[in-house]
Image 1 (cartoon, rainbow, N blue to C red):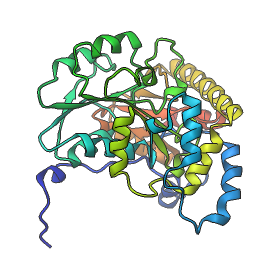
Image 2 (image 1 turned 45 degrees about the vertical axis):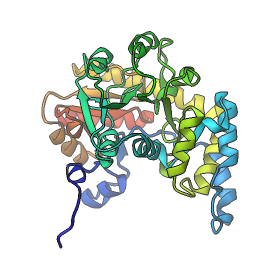
Image 3 (image 1 turned 90 degrees about the vertical axis):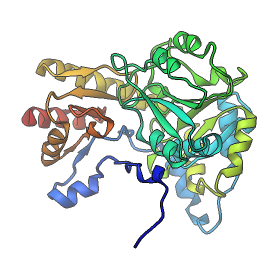
Image 4 (image 1 turned 180 degrees about the horizontal axis):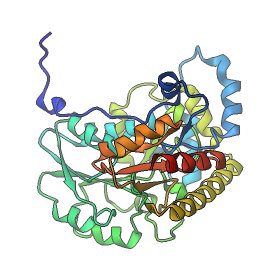
Length: 361
């Protein structure tokens, strides 16, 4: 079969997701494997979300609310913004796709840091635009170099804080210096998928710039701290003019009814939120201490995951860890071939990782 496909589609490398637990069980016959590869909530979903979903199952024959009235209004109240500032997506990935579809044309440039979330590049290339890569500086996003890379073709800049996969944050004072002199028409996307885990008081908060007169979009998700990754729901907060444009290309019923109901309920589950933070922070302390004892290099994080320098092929370590029943994430697809990334799990999961890691090393 001979198909006519644009060159910019041919250049896209598919996104490689973390290995599912079920696949490990099938391939290796391992029961009850440990997965700390995808930055998921180790406690599972919010109990309030589960209860709400169970009550809604009888209505699955109905289409979802296309405007997600209850979720959008609850989010607006929680974030102190207008409902018109919010665009929901099937995960924040879909909002990224809407942004590139609306604001990028073939030949436009979008600036992003090396080793960042792979979906940025995929969505940029889908619209024929050109990704402009900027190297990290000591594993931090180099805002000064990004600013130097701006050209008349620049239409969009992607920033992530805390950054995936490094766990580093962008500080507010650094961002304020960065946006000085940048055209307000350049769309700046601040991906804050892990913002709830950050503890540094200097951490940038994108919502502070909603009424700045700039095209600044803040992305957030229910996949991480709320434990709803399987339902795929996230959102963007942006000036209403931008939101109205995204809603023109947003697919009808793009967020399913169970995702809307679960997310709405999860916003009220403060007890679960605090339990998650405690579990993650205690887990990180344990993992740091164990790795220190082993003499292994790692990078402290402002998120629920962190990087480990294995000083050898990360792909090989990943495969050997699978045989021990533990799924980690090789960072070779991110351009970091000697690093793995893990997230803090439950206490027994963290301990199992350490024991397996000792065997593998």
